[in-house]
Image (tube, rainbow, N blue to C red; front, side):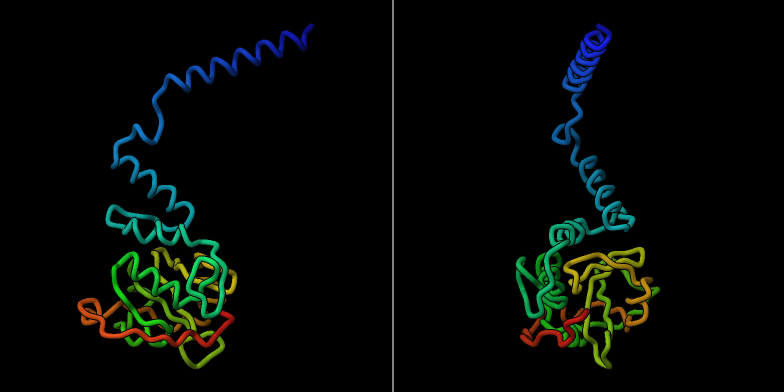
Length: 195
């Protein structure tokens, strides 16, 4: 008898809870656009480990979020598999409407070098991994975090991680001359498959 009474009480409490939730308009569709953007910023901040500000480029963070987990494929340029420079090229095309070169070394030729402490959201980060030459590139997100296509796929990593800290070369900000007019496109891909 006690089990039946407990089951009935539990059933009524669940129904009452659902009725209360249904009568409270708390859906995302009912929220103002500013509140929706604030929620999106909070969500992406938590996932990416980056504090998004009012001036953050949401298109950048949405792009990175959409690509997280895409497998790494040397020379790849699609959702089936992509390498670091192709990911960077695709991001710059979609987010900033800029056509940049295809290899990490060629991309470095398009930037003004920036120190690690001066990096801003959207800047590029370059690495010399097991090489004397630049072999890996990523996009800086803030708080020491960057997005890139690593050997584990598209991911967000920390510049303070022992591995990336050891191989970090320089940051870079696209030169104004390339922002205004890009004159060509390289097809060479990165040499290092183990980035």
